[in-house]
Length: 478
Image (cartoon, rainbow, N blue to C red; front, top):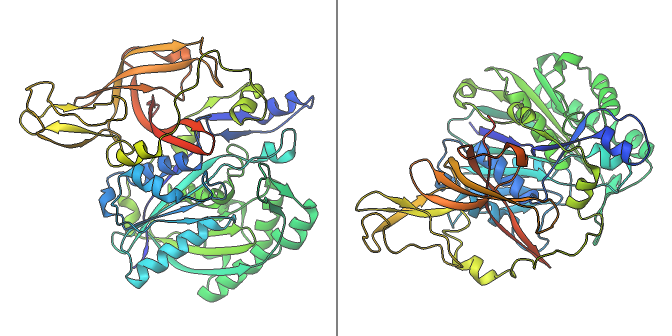
């Protein structure tokens, strides 16, 4: 049996009420809110966060491949999946791949993983689906879009959700697109995309899948349907013959349209309440349609607690300043920094520290058991034990999955930048070790000595043509 062994998701901490967007443009109203990735987040960092949620209790060294699906890859020529795999501490011989350019990229990646496992070529494949699309300021897309990610571990043992079948239709339906150099989405007349595509092709794909599997709408526990907006989605599901109780919340009101990640995130939300035997229909739209049927097995009981969608919806801070959103997205020109920017990006330094720096390894003394996280300049290596002074007698010790406590912090209001103040913390980790980290997803007034924090993978610097990623800390909010 091939299927999903585990799942996870990520929704950024900040949510921007649509009423705040409308107020900035002199309009009233605006229902709900949209998830907004932080200034140091992108599709790669969100994919890492969703994957960490998915891989709770799973040794990353058992992953044979990482498939990353997104329409907003930070790099056009560089394997983005490799960055995710390195941050997760996967093996070097993992067969990583990027899936891009289409809203159905996530479904394509998931079906490709299933085929690879069925063929015996791979045993465990991590599929991370993430998007951070942008609409122009003041437009409808700016309000309706949202940021987020989902992740699935596909394998043939310990399966929690089996795949019963799929049905694909591919059409060159041009409703939304971007060309080289575009920052914002382009779209054709909305009635054309709705009436000639969205309300037609998914219905045809679902009918084809139901006939293929000899099922009816009554056999479905929850339908996870991509939605361009709530009204269009409601009309589509009615045409498919589903009752309102069968429709999984499309997340459009409280997260927004997360592009390639939307249907996968809706599916994660449905699986959080799954019972053995429940069937779930996932319908992915974009240049055609993929309809995929899933069925929960007895293994669903063993997946365990995940942050998933349910917990992430409750972990939020309101972004009540539209100007801050514009600054985060580099949509307005800022005053020059009052202090010099950080140093340049060194690709050679990144390469040298790829095994220790990116996955956040320290060391553990083999003589006395003391752990330490040594970070100075471009070297991540320790040579002498701080406790017993033994020299070069260590084994690697992973810090990325450890929680910690703040023992000291400071706010820098003078340096300027996109989102002052900058918060720097000294963190003592559970089990030992100490490090200096930026803190994110925090309100300055909530910071205090002794607060619990966890690690999160973020951008630490952007330079012309390149990003640098590392770990920061954020408050534990579970």
